[in-house]
Image (cartoon, rainbow, N blue to C red; front, top):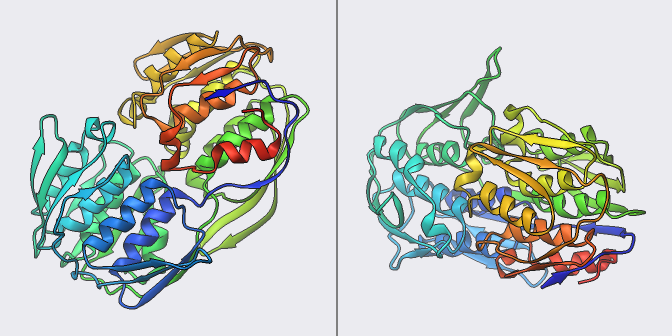
Length: 436
C-alpha cells in the first residue's frame, strides 16, 4: 500500500481502545466471580487472542451486537486445563501476562505464535516465574513454541526488575493472585501502571509505595477474590500517536482525537512532541474507570530536534518509531538513547526504522541503544519503498505517516499486521483527508 502527500488534515476522530487495558480487562474479568462488562474493548487480533485463551481456560466470554463484552469468570485458582495450544498470534503482551496467570495454577499450557512472536525472547518472564515454581520447556533461545506447567501452591516472589518492563511486572503480579502470602515487585524505573490500577479496582489487596528516588514497591496479598467490574476502555495513546504526528507534520492541519487515555506512565510522546514545538492541547480532561482521559487538539507545527532523557523511554516505548518520523521532519538533529528495549519488540525497531528512514531519504546513524536523525527542516522527504516492516504493525503505521509528507509517496510492503492493534488505521486517515 502506498501513502502519498496529503492536503491539510482536519476533523475529529476516535482511536481504538487501549490495548494494554483491553488485555488486562479480559484477564482479570475471567478471574473474577460473576459477570463483568467491558465497553470500548480493542477488537484487534492481539486482544482477540487473549479472549480466545481465556475461553480455552474456562471463562465464558461473549460480545453483544452493540459492542459490549460480557465475561463470566472462573475465580482466582479456577483456570482449567486448555485442550489445545494457546495461539498468541503476534501478541507478546498476551503471551507474557498469560504465562503469569498459568504459573500459579496447576495446569499445563503450550503457547505458540506467528513468525514474528516466535523470534522474541521469553527468558525475562520464564526466569522469575520459575522461581514461583513453574516449569518450562522452551524452543532454543527461550522462544516459542513454549510449554509450561504451573505450580499450585506457588511460592510468593520478592523480585526487583532488572529492566523496566510492564509485562514482566504484570506477569509476576498475576502469578501472585493465586499464590499464598505476599508477592513483592520492586520497580526502579516506573512503567505503565494499568495492572496495579485494575487489580485494585477488581478488589485485590495491593499497595504501591513510592520512594524518594522514584522507585516503586508494589505488594500484593495472594489468594485474592476478585469482584466483577464494569469497565470503559479509553482510546489507546499508542494508536493516537499516529494521527497526532500526522497532524503536526502535514501543513495546515488541525485534528481532534477524542477520548485518549492520558495515564502519566503513557504520556511521554505528548511531552516530547510539545518540547519539539508541537501544538497539542488537552481539552475535556476527565477520569473514566480510574484512568485519566482527555481530547487532544493537534495543530500543524514546525518541530525542532530534541535529545530526550533516556529515563523517559518506558513512558513512550511503543511510540518511538513514529517519534523518529517526527524527528526526520524537524529542524536540526535528534538523538535518542537508552532504547535497548526496542531491539526485542515485534522487530528490532531501531534497525528496522533506521533502514526504512534511509530508504526514504533521511540521514540516520544507528547506535547500539538508539539512533541519531538529521531532520529535513520541515521539507518533504523524497519517499520510496517498499519499506520492509518485518511484520511489525508500528513500523508500518509510522512509515504510512511519513508518506503523507513525502514528495513521491511511501510504499509499505505489508499493512496486514496493523490489524493486531489498529484495524481502522487506514480508514481513519482517509476520514481526515489523507490520500491512500
